[in-house]
Image (tube, rainbow, N blue to C red; front, side):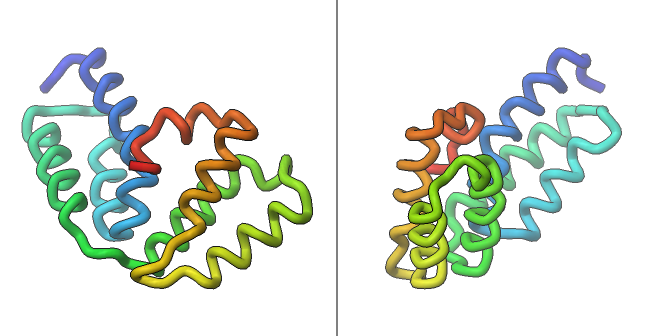
Length: 126
């Protein structure tokens, strides 16, 4: 078993990756989220976490997974945005395809405008 301070470091790292993972694979997101249940951390869990992140980085675009993640991220500022920003976001998400995604840069623009540090400090836009 690894000490609690290492669990905290791992939890912070997961927080940076979670929407990136969610945007690529719901199954991987659920698997990794479950690693952190119980507040216990081990070298095996650490290795599994790193393997899953590496695997997720290689996954092809999944529009359904991206749409789900974008809607979760949208929740951070949906009460702050203007009606026009809301309409633009909804239009861009609906128009999204495997090869065209204007919603992600728009979310980044909104995150910067409204200074959503949790999202800006994550790997979501990478």
